[in-house]
Image (cartoon, rainbow, N blue to C red; front, side, top):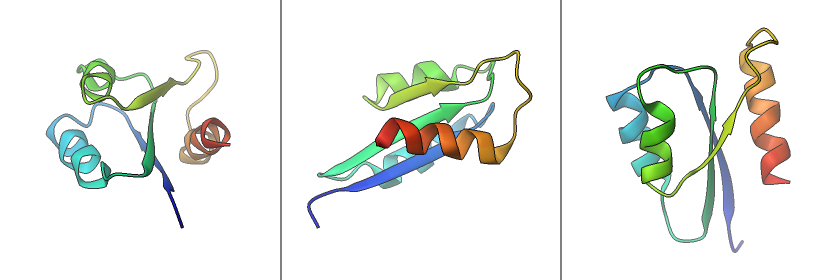
Length: 76
């Protein structure tokens, strides 16, 4: 296996997000962070680490399943 796709979902996760993203940033891994309307700088943090970010449309209710599916679609 040459690479692994990792989907991280969250909203206002702060330091937990940083630790999570750093733990999966390995050579060959493709990582995407799916954000559900954070207001704490989570999106900026992920981007500063070189992680791809998908920001969910705020007009549609958030669910974990929706976020995971959005990340999966990005990876495909």
